[in-house]
Amino acid sequence: MKNQMNNLLLETKKLLKKYKIRPNRRKGQNFIIDYKIIEKQIRFANISNQDIVVEIGAGLGTLTQFLAEISKKVIAIEIDKRLIQILEDRFSTFKNVEIIHGDILDLELPLDFNKIVSNIPYSISSPLTFKILDEMNFIDLAILTYQLDFAKRMIAHPGSKEYSRLSVNVYYKAHVKILEKVPNDSFYPPPKVQSAILELIPRKPPFKVIDEKFFNVITQKLFIRKNRKVKKMLQNYLETKNLSKHEIGLIIKDLPYQDMRVRNLPPEAFAEISNILWSKYSDYIHE
Image (cartoon, rainbow, N blue to C red; front, side, top):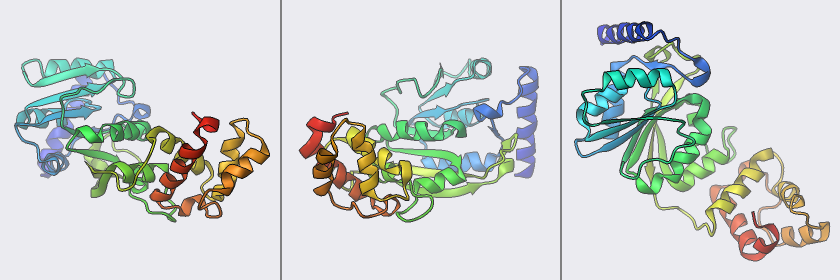
C-alpha cells in the first residue's frame, strides 16, 4: 500500500509539472494520493454500475477515474480552468465522464444523479454543505471528506462547543456520521488541518417545520450569539423589522425557551420558535 501511495504521489507531481500547475492552497487544492482512502470512499458509497455520481472539486481526476471504472456515470465539477484541461485530456476516451467547468455554489446541480462522492474544497465547506442539504431529498447518500473540526460541528449536540446552526440543519435533513479520520499525508500537498470522511443519508425530518426558509433564518439569527439568551437574540432580530418595543414585547411574550441560552436549545426548539412566529406574526416579520 505504501508503494501504491508513492506511485500516486509521483503521478500527481508529474501531472502538475506537465501542466505547469502549482497547487493553490486558498482554493483548497490538496490532491488525494492515498489509494486506501479512495477505496474506502468507494466502498462507503457502495458504488455500482447503476449509480450516477457527482464529484465536487474533481482536481486531477484521481478519484474520478476510480468512480468512472465502477459507476454508470460520473459528473465531475471543477472550478479551476487549468485543472479542467487535465480532466478533459485524461478522460477524453471515457464515455461515462461528464466534466463541468464552474463554481459549484453558482451551478444548478444535474437532476439525474443519485450519489455524491467528493474530497470537497475546505474553503467552501459551509455554503457547499447547505447546498448539498437542499439536495438530500433527491439522492441516496453523500460521502464527503471534510476538515475534521468542521465535521465535528456537523454532528455536534446541544450544549457542546461545536454546536451550531450547521448542526441543527444537518440534523433536520440527514443522518450523519464520521466514518474515518484521514491522515494529512493522504493528500498532496498535505493540508495543515486534520480531515475526516463523513456519510450523509437523507431522512424524513424528525420534526415539523411550517416554512423551511424562515426556519433557516431564525436558526441563523439566534446563533449569531449562541451564548446569549433566546429572548435577547429574538429582540435583536425583531428590532430589524421596524417593530415598536411594545410589539416586540407582545411577540416574545408568547414564545417558549426565551430564558434558555441558544447553545442549549435542541433542534426541535428552533422549529417550534420559527413555527410560532410564522403562524402568528408572519405579516409583521415576513422575510
